[in-house]
Image 1 (tube, rainbow, N blue to C red):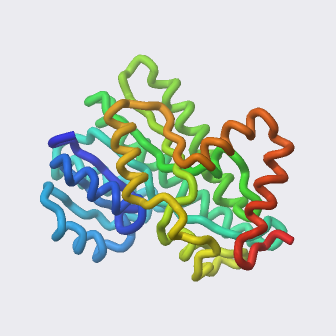
Image 2: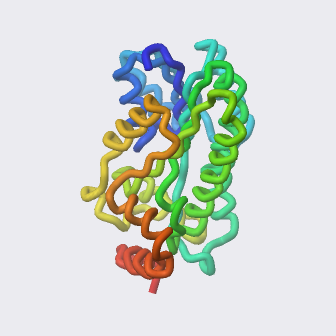
Length: 265
């Protein structure tokens, strides 16, 4: 990983922040992208690698073009793109304004498409790596997370096509699916009217940390794995959904219904 040029979106907090710190251990050349550039600048002061920050809203196509341009302008190449930026939501479809689902798709899905599309020529040149930080919610639809699961399922399809199209080019494509991870994603998750949830409905202390997730992702990139599914609960959910889908529907419903102030009755 030394001197590899790595772009990380959503790098100001959570898994993105942990990924930046993990790549810093390898003396990679790092491009940090997020809407909150002040947080990125603060992060840079703590890093030893060569790093730049680019203010980026991945839902805006021109921002993604600018991100790629700035990375190439500074470092001359791109070796690894990690599409990590994302937002969540919690609301039943019947109670959700359609604009909330569009917002989830714009950030989670289209952000991944935009960054990958414009980074692709440089990644192909170096037989580089594309990673999308997805979720178990992209394998199993989570009730009350309609926009989130939909966007993650879309990302899975996008990566599957990208991988197949590039069988002969040497491009590496990794789908990383953490289980529930300790981060602020649930605090800023949207509710049905588009406002922020504010407080997490889950016990964050019982979850895998962002730092653990980052280590697993970097290791998977180094090994050029095609898929990474994390946590025992996550692995079981994916497996059992293939074997006993009707039973898993009920188990997932009951599990999500136990959340504090769950929209499920």
